[in-house]
Image 1 (cartoon, rainbow, N blue to C red):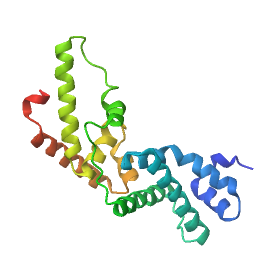
Image 2 (image 1 turned 30 degrees about the horizontal axis):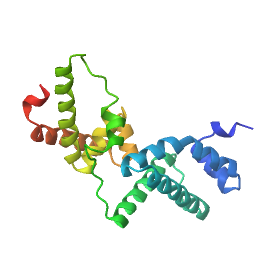
Image 3 (image 1 turned 120 degrees about the vertical axis):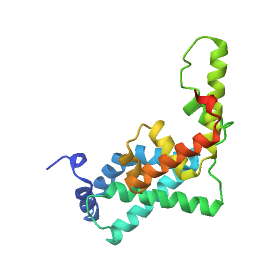
Length: 195
């Protein structure tokens, strides 16, 4: 018998529907890190992300057991669409604004502070930090969809195809959001700040 972890998503789903819980565990193992990171990036809170991650897989279980999932070799895209809908529902319930603050220490540690300074010169370091703070402030003011594409592209090194799959939109939509994000950043930031 073929190793369960080597099976396709659709094969694992079929096995799970037939009663093999090990197949569902293999699906979770395949996507848990990537899915949790996506949700955490969206909500900005690990505890909330953990809850939404669990809710996503509970929803997946219900759909698979009900037999309403259409197997077309696109489980990953569907899974991330379910997670995205969970995030949207969460924000609707809490009426939360997902705005990144330049004073958010977690964001600073995750993105800004791990970038090396280009020079040991103190004055240059201060100028560079001011540039980063300005850029960070401008990025935080972008509409959420544009900000997400920008972060996924430059901080997560994702291709536009990966971004499209990750966010459940077409590649053209992802490209358009990036284009508008860059245009908006150019309008917000003084030209000399990034020369």
